Length: 167
Image 1 (tube, rainbow, N blue to C red):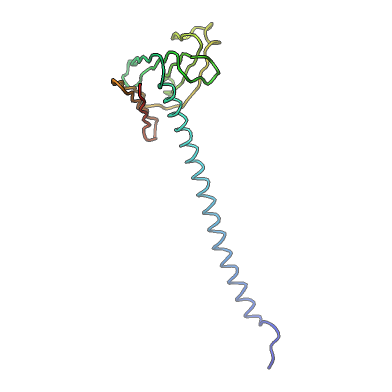
Image 2 (cartoon, rainbow, N blue to C red):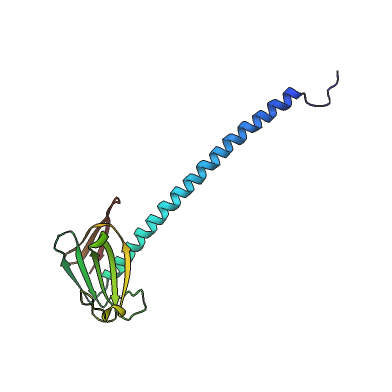
């Protein structure tokens, strides 16, 4: 007896096996897509943290003077930097202030070519550039030592960020 093709049973078994393999492959691909979305979100969060730390570090390094004012609730400092080497708005040796606003505990950075006096007057609003760094800041403190500065920064539901710079 000579066979020239597959039987119906052999064909059905091979189609069933191919369907099972395809099902497992689609499940794996779906898991890979979920992992990719998760890691993209994680990368965005880490990128934002690195941006904050880099900006804060470069603001604090090689400045003419840094003064710290502690807020009334003792959890937040206001950092005033005179003649910074870093400008986000192409200003020559800008004056910079980092502070936390009461509403939503928003960390902001103010930059101006002239010294910044708080509270801001309506006339000075046009001279000051402001950057909203992040909301829900729980703790923002600068610790000053003889040779180094240490900034401790904590946002809600996130691990703390720490920056150490030399004077």
